Amino acid sequence: MHYLSTRGDATPRQFCDILLEGLAPDGGLYLPERYPQLTSAELARLRGVYRQQGYAALAFEILSLYIDDIPAADLRAICDKTYTQQVFGTPEITPLKKLSGGFYLEALSNGPTLAFKDMAMQLLGNLFEYELARRGQQLNILGATSGDTGSAAEYAMRGKQGIRVFMLSPHGRMSAFQQAQMFSLQDANIHNIAIEGVFDDCQDIVKAVSNDLAFKRQHQIGTVNSINWARLLAQVVYYFAGWFQATQADDEPVDFTVPSGNFGNVCAGHVARMMGLPIGQLVVATNENDVLDEFFRTGRYRVRGSADTFETSSPSMDISKASNFERFVADVLNRDGARVKALFADALAQKGEFSLPAELQAWRDRGQAWASGKSTHADRLSTIRNVYEQHGVMIDTHTADGVKVARQHQRPSVPMIVLETALPIKFAATIREALGREPERPAALEGIENLPRRVQVLPADVAQVKALIARHCAA
Ligand SMILES: *Cc1c(COP(=O)(O)O)cnc(C)c1O
Image 1 (cartoon, rainbow, N blue to C red):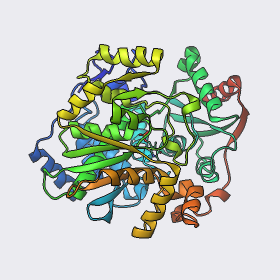
Image 2 (image 1 turned 45 degrees about the horizontal axis):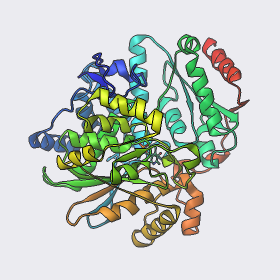
Image 3 (image 1 turned 30 degrees about the vertical axis):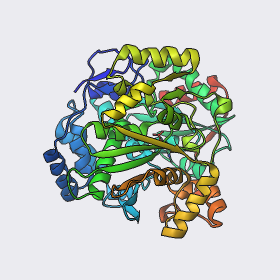
Image 4 (image 1 turned 90 degrees about the vertical axis):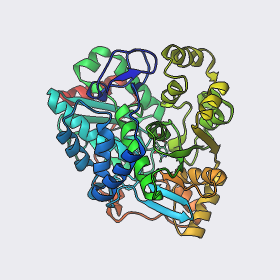
């Protein structure tokens, strides 16, 4: 299997060539040259694999279709080591919780940092360690976080050979729980750096360091952002697992609703459907930052400026543009790299928007159903309250956005699965506002705020961050 850029660079690359990369050299995103097609006999076989051997075996089967430059036995061992009950809390790894007839939550947030990003990041940690060892290389991951992504990356990379993590966060601005999650890690290869500034200052420092190509090369600096193809591929697996749990027969459709920000999670659903998984509708749920809802309603993609990007109570969906969206558009445009480039490199840069209403309609006419909706703070509060009262289940603010929108699109006799993207404990203030009580906390995280902390505070100064990285790389 070869990987090509969405913007037309057709240099053939294999999976491990792009594993440690970010963007393609032409600024595009990597996509497989084609999506492997599964017949219903093949789906029936995979259902058996999942039922009899479990999630890790299913992950191996799906990943094998896209990865042919890692020996099968090694890839299987990586999957077995990643998707364990010990790490993800249940033997099913992503169990369905039934709320009412035909309406389910798929639990994706029982990993170490209690958000769905663990599903992909835990695999990435093991793939990185494997590939770096094979090449005899080291990698220093530099990132900026305001919460979820940074902690998922740290928990995935902790203790890994050949990898160090330098994670910048705005000093004193993350929630007490998020700070405790990250700063309580005592692993020697994890470096928490609290920057005296806001999240944008952290991001500017990461950009400045990455733009210093000599420094970047000398210190093997890399990232783990959401456009990484391996992360997306890992997420394809749980669409299969959700479908197997909600259906008996091998042609029964299921709808999915996905709380969305950068379009990584729902793009994995798109890939699963392109492979032949019988997904009826993919429903995109946004919060007040409704770039994606607007696109699926009107065909107009309009990125927002920072003045129009709102801070909401589902903060992991507060985006101004959706960094994985280019992959979907490339498929809608039948992989016309020149057109994708004209839209994403030219139209967005010049006008901040483009429109594809006819192309979106043509795509839907080919049986690719997409729907969308948005949710507000008031919707989140009432949905959290209502799900708790009716079903005794506490959901987080992002999942609440999903449930609200899913209810508007549920079809009679078609199961609807809402992806649960985080646990309520991560967003305690809104849970208190909605329910007047504290969110449930997994036993393993009792008292995490009182553990000793490992963090260094630095001013928002590129030179000091570089000096710190250089010092650790020399040690
Ligand atoms: C990252 C995140 C999202 C958004 O996922 P995308 O892949 O960016 O669309 C939704 N909910 C939670 C809790 C997240 O951490």
